[in-house]
Amino acid sequence: GNSVTQMEGPVTLSEEAFLTINCTYTATGYPSLFWYVQYPGEGLQLLLKATKADDKGSNKGFEATYRKETTSFHLEKGSVQVSDSAVYFCALSDRRSSASKIIFGSGTRLSIRP
Amino acid sequence: EPEVTQTPSHQVTQMGQEVILRCVPISNHLYFYWYRQILGQKVEFLVSFYNNEISEKSEIFDDQFSVERPDGSNFTLKIRSTKLEDSAMYFCASSDSGRDLAKNIQYFGAGTRLSVL
Image (tube, rainbow over all chains, first blue to last red; front, side):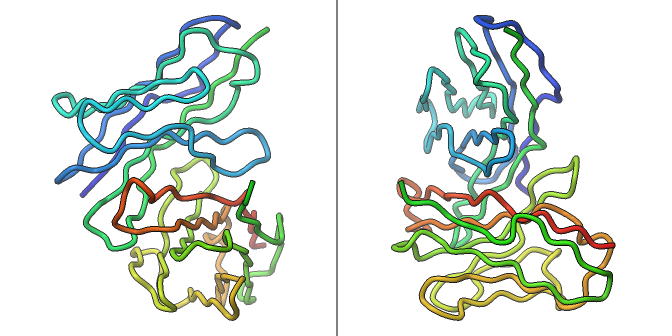
């Protein structure tokens, strides 16, 4: 079945460091790919998405490119801030289901030191 | 900005009791979902709901679970007889389209933490 695998955390970086969180997926067909973020005490928020191969999603300085050849959707940010501390979830949407459920990775906790 | 609201934020119950978790989806959305996250584990899909019926459900969503949209605004998840292993964070989500993936952004609530003692 469809699945998402992302790098385990926690990840701890200093402010202004470069961030990469790896994500790979297994899916039949052409899923849509997402990164969700969960700030402390809050719900899941969509950070960015890509719906087809080579699409790049971007938001708040974060980017991820849909790579079909490597089945990957790695999250990157050039210079992280303390406010980026959160849990990040890679996810895919199964187009075959009528209501397109989302399948999540296990989440990566990111902590940024001032 | 419109948001999905869930109540209560934390529910404590005794094993065997019934619980109802409540959600108010975004008002013009048509698709509704429940997910859960057991502590330290992945967020898992439970059920999707459209046009007053279940569209899809996972293996987790057995006869102990039910969903309902009792009026035009609320969407509820009922667990008839809670077990210890039902302890988890339950997330409600809504979207305004299913197959049109350009529109199928699911908006999540902050979650209800269910603790079964």
